[in-house]
Amino acid sequence: MNVTAPICSLTTCGGTPAVCRTGCALEVIDELLRAHGTVRGDEVDGLLDLRWFLNHRADAEAALALFCTLRRAMEGRHYLAFFRLRRWLENHISVTARLCPGLPARTVSLALNNFCLEAIRSRCVLAARRPGEPLFGARVTFAFAPLAPVIREVTTSLALA
Amino acid sequence: MKTATTSAATKTKTDTRITDALNQVLADSYALMALTHLAHWNIEGPDFFELHKAFQKQYEELFEAVDEIAERVRALDAFAIGGLNKLARTAGMEEFTSPMPQKDYIAALVVAHEKVLDDATQTRHLAGESDDLQTQDLMVRRLLFHQKTLWMLKSALKQ
Image 1 (cartoon, rainbow over the protein chains, first blue to last red):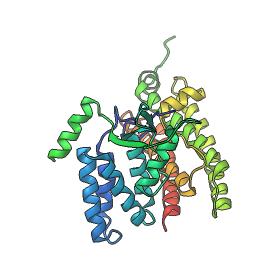
Image 2: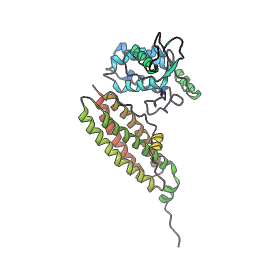
Image 3: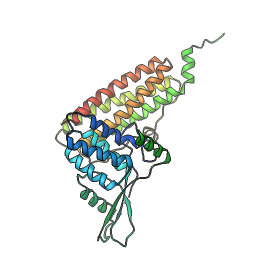
Image 4: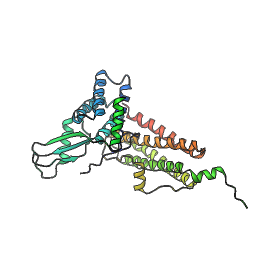
């Protein structure tokens, strides 16, 4: 399976997680937060929560679930912003899928073509499964891809700002 | 007999920053042309005819632009980069995986145009610093095209 990360969606970004500025997605969210009149109050709360998850690279699964909720509500009004966030998440979240408890876990690419976490999870299982392989008690794990040391410094300075 | 050397002539031979930057814009433009051509072929949906025609107009404009940029590199006494592999690596743009939703093609092209816009702006600054007005003029024309196309693509994404 090809797990080559796509280039980050922002042109100000260097590309793959090893060189990507972690601030890209935060900038997109900040732009959404500044979009007066087209973001509702509950959406602002959700965006702030998502910003926290991405800034701290914490709980990738919860971040994805929240992203899906926001996407369903807001994508029609902010297609480009959600396209950029999709690309960023695909680039920064790694996925491992275990088809059965006894089988080794496999790494698969994250493709955010679905609008809810369960559908994304199912898609990851299907992507990991080879023809004829058993499927019982499958488990999918989402995690933020590790950053290169130089990126961690950027993250720290952003967190302090 | 002594050969006169103008300062402009000397500059064209020494300032590789400008030709490197032009080659970057060349690679970007070539990659963007290929992406736009792919979108022209593979886009599907209710706005097919309109977008199919719009993308054709855009890649034809880009085809003329890459020639002009490459010839400017040669006029500055450097060599234009080429070859699909090298152009793609230099541009570093994400390639499409068809099929995609109609709006994803447009959004992906927005991102690609923004990349060219950034690199052309950088090249325009470098040319300005070196008093290379011809390159600056070329970049200004490129910027106008990319800004106008971005406006159109972003407008097409709105509800």
